[in-house]
Image (cartoon, rainbow, N blue to C red):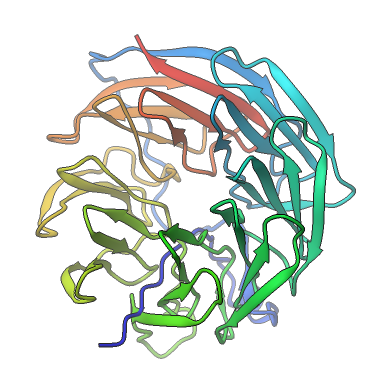
Length: 389
């Protein structure tokens, strides 16, 4: 069977059709006027306390742009970047800044880590690699267009995705181009791309056409592809099926999602769908061994049974609060919102059990977790480490 799996969804729609039609490049952004109004926060019984471990200023964040600049975890450091070209490293335990460098470009895809190097992509379509220990620039390579997702690497190959539907394999040592794979981009798509995921010797990547592909990491040769979602409807907006949530792999199952589409669970052994569930999302997902957790496009937090796809619970008291994707901290589920609040949910029933505010603008990117700590980068560039008391 031909496999296709496409995964990633991180973009906002512009309300006016005229504005959309002006996006001849096929991508658009903006502050959506549609959708539910942000729900006011209700008093909750806080049975779990969230502790701020440290907080540091990384620069100007996304500088008013709709960019999901995600921090990356190394062995002992956390790396972050801002739109104005700063790339920084901090000690995970203390928040002490280890190094900072700056490039003369706007960073739009960050942050990637692999093989003792840190990677970012830029508005001009360049990929940069830095030494993770010193911040020294290792190399710079130009690809075809803007990079909106963090480049990823296994230490030998760096994979970067551009907004014109191209996937590049670069030599991790010097940035030399090894291979190129290209998909057709729809006339209109959401502004954003999912990050590729490397699994063994395969790179999995979602595209704006609703497809997910598996490519050989060494050569770029396509191994299989799968349709995560199918365009439907008469208008171009109705037919948006971007895969902006990064693919997620757990226990031999590949989980994919698409905007205005569905969640798919696909067996990596057979290539067959195990289950599907109609849910629209453009945020990354999380698993804990029992459930698949996601935030839909109206900011409902949902839990689905990993094995069957059956709904376990839905938490809708945060409706319209522009939630990030979920992350796991301890035994709890964490999401952050547009006002900089971090919310903790009980995994068994979705009950809200904890809340704190980090400030520094709202959260656009999903928090990064090492299992016991969360690292959250806000839109204004504040990097905060959180733990459970």
